[in-house]
Length: 239
Image (tube, rainbow, N blue to C red):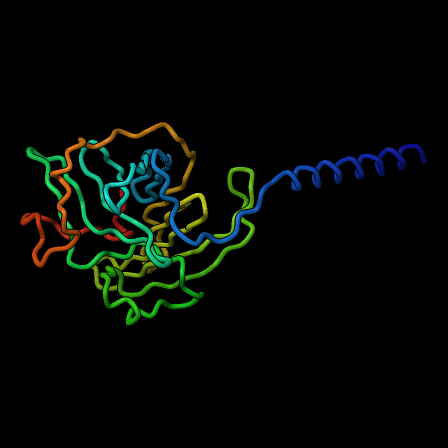
């Protein structure tokens, strides 16, 4: 009898502890835009399944340049010029620290992420003023994901490219904390790479040179400012 009472009391204590831990967790709803906080940085672990290698990368957000924020994995080399607009994350151009440095803007901004779409396939005809690299994009939702001790709801943006030789799909998990995870895999199911957020830091990233001449007064031009500009990579080529 005494043993049964002890077991019963232990179950009560464990239940209370579990409830207490759960109640201390915050819950974050679906994001409405990408978190462009100057000075923010995210550390990611990239696991390449086929090569069986793991590397770490850091994504930085810089202060505003006119109407844009700097976004870069290689802040000493270049910054992409991005902003949020009506529920989408746009990239408008790029600053490259060549000798001399130069700035380019694209005729149409690229869409990197959607925060305004219902679940299902994205209707590209609504976005004729923008460029989209993928053949198809599907939006899903995951709820109550346990991330860093809290609960998050997030969008799962599936970018599908059927025209490339490899035929790949990239699932991007987006929460209020930012891009939480990229999973890139071949359409036959083999995983190519999984990139997962491991930490968020707020130490200021390296700032680009403060020379206003790098940023033209006109946001858009009929021709690209930088003649040698390569096409901007889409989400599936982020590194």
